Length: 322
Image 1 (cartoon, rainbow, N blue to C red):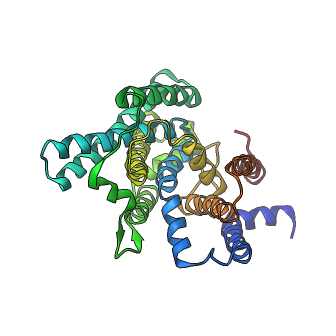
Image 2 (cartoon, rainbow, N blue to C red):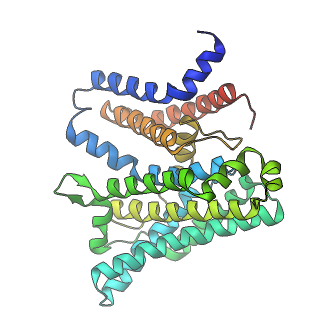
């Protein structure tokens, strides 16, 4: 098999083969890896990152980036549990308070990302710098909102992140699957999805075709913001508290998952199918390292190596430089 055929095979099947190989290796390394309890736990662990990945995949395909994800997850999540606590203690029905709280989290994510999209498109500012600034600002607002201390006693909204159907299937996994389906529909069955690929692949050609790059990018950021806000609600309800210092680095896990899954940092290339497998690969590696009692410091090193390898594979297989 020559280099060209090898690259073609990798682009089409490589990511699935890697995941399958990892599953086999991990099942050999640990007898409990394929147990029902561990598989359910694994899916629950990757739910938050996968929801963020759904949004970041669209951004990367559109040729954009976002470094503020983790900070906005913390901000949206704290606002979610804080809102629920205030409303429920004020006498509002639990279900209604929960819906309002989750919508508040989604709205926060959308507002922040809308601002990022507008600044990037209107002032032609680098997405890297703008979203880095949003990361700093978002974390600061989160500390101001919480007073720098965690929010405890959040009530029954914790079921969103911890609850399970029949004690088996976590609600977070169901939400994750719904987000995956929604992303697939957006990218493959809507005009916006076609515009996202066009703008990311060749902005000038897209403009010549009458596609508004500014509008498309802003809409991609809005959708990403909705996913980030929802991820924040899932994250903090799983922790059963509002933790302003948590969710650090989640954006890098999501970006890594998308790139591992075949999304090109140059834009125009990527699928939600690949990104989800990428998220699962990261989750499987983290899970087996935890089962083997590998310290978190070493896990961070391994994750960093995965990011570097993913970028190298992106450059080699796509023949582009970011």
